[in-house]
Amino acid sequence: MEKSDLTKANFQGADLREADLNGVIATGANFADTDLRNALLVRAVADNASFRDAKMDAANLERMDLKGADFRNARLRQGKLDRIAAHNANFAGADLSGVRLVSADLTGANLTDVDFDGALLRRTRLVGADLTGARNMDQSRILGACGDETTKLPKGIRLGKCDD
Image (cartoon, rainbow, N blue to C red; front, side):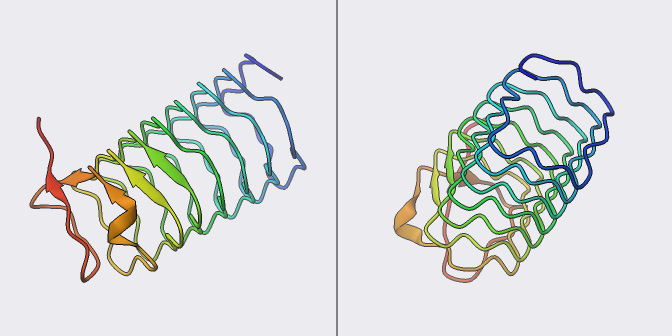
């Protein structure tokens, strides 16, 4: 389905393991409860799409536009989320164990109760993000990530201030 227009498509509960969705336009699409393990979504656009409760282990979401996307309780273990733009996305309760977030923009994202076990946050922008209750964050794996005075962090985690 590479480069397809999937705007507002409904894939709820579908098996899309190892699917090639590179460059798709999936604005407002429904991927809730979908199996997207090992799927390729590089440079896709999925603003306001739902990935709620999706299985996305080892999925590659590099350079995706995910503004306002819903990832509540999704499982993204070992996923690649480098350079995503996920302003105001909702990751509440998601499993981001082992995820790579390099040069990602999570401005205003809801990251409450997320599991970050083994996750790498390098140069990730967390301005206004809410990480209340986030678990297993490792300060040594937060390299150059930044936030501001409105960023809510779990106890013991520190971020530098973002340059505007």
